[in-house]
Image (cartoon, rainbow, N blue to C red; front, top):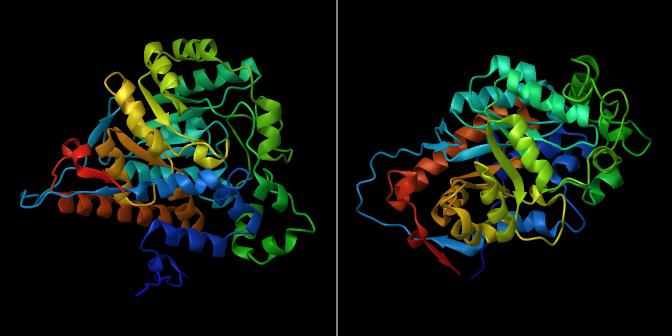
Length: 392
């Protein structure tokens, strides 16, 4: 007997019951170049798919009769309390996906008591986020060739009282994002004969983009033209503006210049994890940039156990990428991660319905985490261990 996976039609926010549903709603509501920027990855996108598939190769083993009538999914990450062992990874260009952009994500992160991050390429300024949102927040730091810009980002994050800087270490050159090349996606979007019909067929998006707040990358526009007045692809931006000479010495200097909680995002090998721990970072994000850089690389969850075994007693290890279900978070925690994190899990929801979408996505994930903890027979996240996991 064979079973066919149920595939419901998703036409409105109330139809969304899981993160994959928000993806479908976003696909319907976005011009195709914008959707494919969120959804796409490098080369054949094998790593992007593996990031989620990896969780399916390990099964949860519940305990019963444990009296898990109440659960507490809270934890502490880099010194700040979090109501869930879940972080909203920093992502760029959010006002392209929905006019509310980073403001919507920040509000919902604050409401849920979660860490969230803004990118150096965010569409809302460091200062605005720092002034208006009290929750724990990080600046995802891209290391530019322009040393003045690098220094300015640090000083602005200090003045805005950000809780951490997270240096992204896997973007010294851009991955080969073929979907973006085919669609001609750029920031800000360019209207071309190949894509103008798609923009015209999504008038709500187009009107919001054209007539609301002018598109800008305020953390960069004081230093560089690319991405504000001048349309540029993300690939060209990375290849022309970011410094491929980034090395451990530069990371150590940035840590010293910042002086606060410091995280490296993009660690995938045990050797690099040990080097980061020796350097004295507070946390590492085991991450392959959502599969958008090196296609054919390992999934974060595949690498998690050996990295936790190597450095988990010295740094906080965060499993970043591929998270689509509360059970994925529990599997990461049982392996030894301090928390799990993801970007697409809220970007689909933002693109689908703005702040209301992000709110519903996070509510659903919180309910899944709480329910799955009860079904696992644990009342606190630290009770999850590898005894609760079995590989297939």
